[in-house]
Length: 87
Image 1 (cartoon, rainbow, N blue to C red):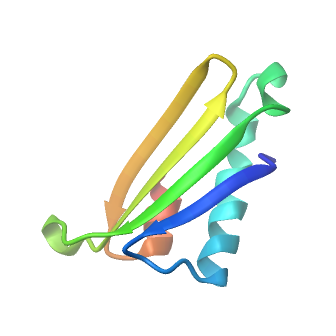
Image 2 (tube, helix red, strand yellow):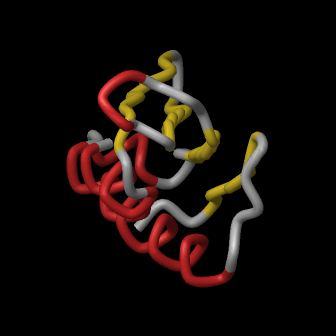
């Protein structure tokens, strides 16, 4: 599990439930990382409240830093927990 995860909100107050949910789901991404990258991997999650198309109210961006690379995933949804799942 990715041990260093920073979760921040942009125009969104991150509550305890959302923080735990994001830590659980983003932390599991280490199973896709090479063995040598697992120990030093860290993640940042930015949850933004937006006025997007198709009633999308939240945007979640996950940034995973591994040696020599930065992986970024971003998506929007009408539900913040659904947006975390999609990322």
